[in-house]
Picture 1 (spheres, each protein chain N blue to C red):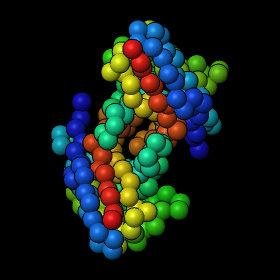
Picture 2 (tube, helix red, strand yellow):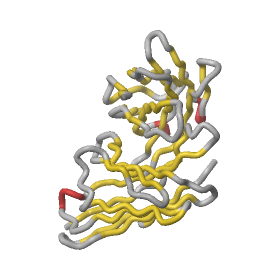
Picture 3 (cartoon, each protein chain N blue to C red):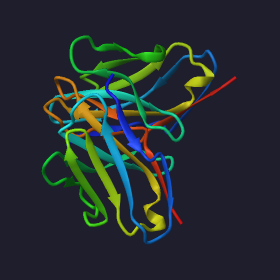
Amino acid sequence: GAVVSQHPSWVICKSGTSVKIECRSLDFQATTMFWYRQFPKQSLMLMATSNEGSKATYEQGVEKDKFLINHASLTLSTLTVTSAHPEDSSFYICSAPTGSFGGELFFGEGSRLTVL
Amino acid sequence: AQSVTQLDSQVPVFEEAPVELRCNYSSSVSVYLFWYVQYPNQGLQLLLKYLSGSTLVKGINGFEAEFNKSQTSFHLRKPSVHISDTAEYFCAVKENTGFQKLVFGTGTRLLVSP
């Protein structure tokens, strides 16, 4: 199946710094990518939809200025957590749809962010 | 809008016993349905999906699920579980048009003990 890769898998940063997480589709082109956030022992909550060449669409309640999303190419989307605080600590997972129906989503391995 | 309900937050079961993880969904349009498995600190792996056709869907690792439109359910089953099946299982739904977002249930933790 299609492969989606995230980097880094783990990141620890100090409060107030910014962290960038990359999401790459390795063997297919993705005009759309989705960014999810998962708190411990909870489900995945969609944060935003990343669109190649245009602005991301954010879900209600997600701060656009804190979670900057850039979809610069058909294989790369980035999520930047700006001025991170401990409450931003979470597991962030990206995904990209593929297939003729756009039905199946392939997920990255996830990125664990810990803000001290 | 779609929604997914997984009533069981945790399901304990003994090794080699059968298991069923329940999933009910709500939608005003036709949908695609998915089951994903997540191991600790990892992303999601697709177990199986229903797009159309036969309502009984077989997936990886011996799992299967049955789409029941009248009951709006998509329960996941396995006739004999292994210790290695211990994980979090998510049911998900999306509209069957274009690249619509996937909506997840709250997850069911399957705990298999010897």
